[in-house]
Length: 219
Figure 1 (cartoon, rainbow, N blue to C red):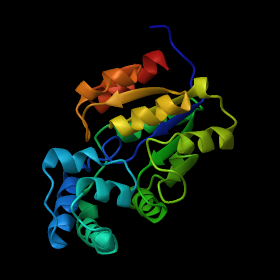
Figure 2 (cartoon, one colour):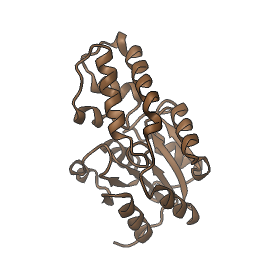
Figure 3 (cartoon, rainbow, N blue to C red):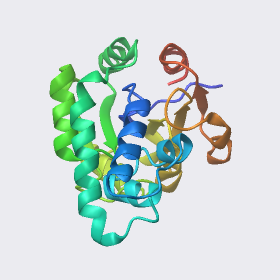
């Protein structure tokens, strides 16, 4: 394909940059179990990754009454905090981000994490200096609303056609479609790539190495 110029590249966090899908899935299941709900399957729990926390938990545990949502959120945070240091960057992410930075792209994060959760994750892996901006689900509309990307595009004065969203879920790719932006799906995270086709990503990468090679050649 003919190379395209993207000034702004937005990354999802969990499942795209971080190998966190399995741990988040187990934490969702444990939280639902703690409050007496029907424990979701691995597929149902991983499907909601990328949404804002309470939106995700409510979707994963539809039989948990609303009055237990605060407890459900607290139990998820308890389990996640106990395991967050087991989460690591996918191999190859740092060289990828460093090369993109050297090519003068604006690098941003559009995530379902909270602001405090993202800040802690950035500190833990010393990535603070690589990203130029970010939006989290607790400070704006969650995915698949396009608001996160709209706000980032306004912040950096970049048009939709010069913006690329990279994510591992249909929520990420639908957000890009809703915002009028191009997207790339990655199949090594929370959602299988069979659902990506209808959302028209430019490419589906099956590893960080493949993502790196595609961006070097085409973006």
